[in-house]
Image (cartoon, rainbow over all chains, first blue to last red; front, side):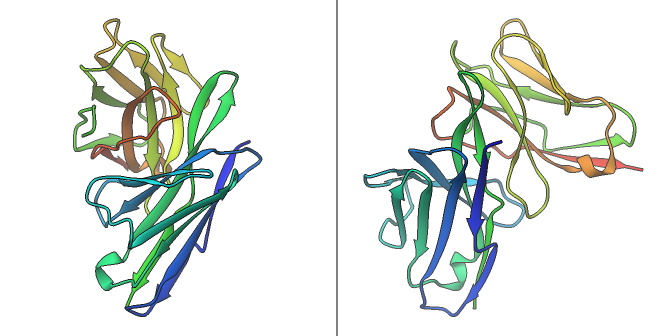
Length: 118
Length: 109
């Protein structure tokens, strides 16, 4: 069945460095992927919509220059957290819509990436 | 903003049915009701979805009221592993999903 993977599953970095997180759709093509961020004991917050071959659409309040999104192929979207700071420490989750049964879509979520910025 | 309202938390005894309500009074005619759950430190997991009719699968049952303004997710025999945050979402499918706060379900032995 359709699966979304993320890499790495966790990462620790120093303040000021950049971190890249990969999101892949396995066994299906995803023209659109979504990136979420989740702080402890809070719900998922949508950051941006990643569109294959075009610019990402960012939600209000999300800095596009800080969270760079590249959707270079139908199965891969990357999120780069540039000049990371401790307040960027969070759980980052990607998702993509795929087809569970004919003509009925389902949103598949990746396992998440835990980012800790020291 | 999320288009659904759910209780903040619920308790359920192991082996009993867990009934999780959701209000979605502004749902439009073509929007589906989706349920996901999130176990600690994992990505959300799909449970079930429906449009108008009640649905059942190996995990749960979904009861949607006739006016579609509310629904109930039923876990027929809750186990300790069902302890999670459950999210009720309305969506056309294929578009961005806005999560509400969800219901934190505690299954107790």
